[in-house]
Length: 227
View 1 (cartoon, one colour):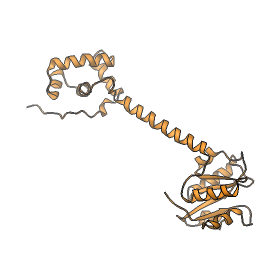
View 2 (cartoon, helix red, strand yellow):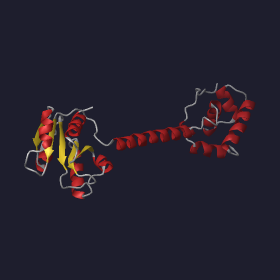
View 3 (cartoon, rainbow, N blue to C red):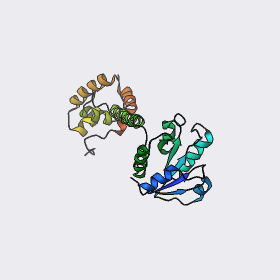
View 4 (tube, rainbow, N blue to C red):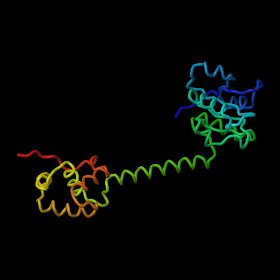
């Protein structure tokens, strides 16, 4: 995780801001930069942009576009944010690493600076919780989709092996030879497979195997060559 020891302050005000004084008090360097200077300077790996939102709203296209452009070159957080003028979700989508409100108390500002300088996000807990919940939900869905790609719960490994061979065009005797089982056992397995997959014949079983992604199933046997 990257750490930052310098804030590049972008503000419409020519006066020194409290953010500079507070940042300096915890050994974070500060430099005031114009937007033009910011876009023409070399990227400093130790620097993070502090962007003033005084008198601005994130819903304005110009402001959102400017923040997004800066975020493509530097890590950035916004400060002097009026309540209700900046949607945290939109800010995060634009690449903003944190939001500091204009009415935040000094102790909260110092906490924000420390968190941001450590390379962490500084957002309301509810938003971070929502993001984690979304991530966990996506992971569960991906796992479920992965599991459904190979219906292990309905077909045994041996049945999957047989489906794989049948999908490759093997006949019962060839399947029996590859799996070291009798042709009669293959027929018994196929009856079970047809019932579980609701396939009425090999053509429908082939279609089912394609839809179920069985072609990517790795069988637990080695293909034997005919003597």
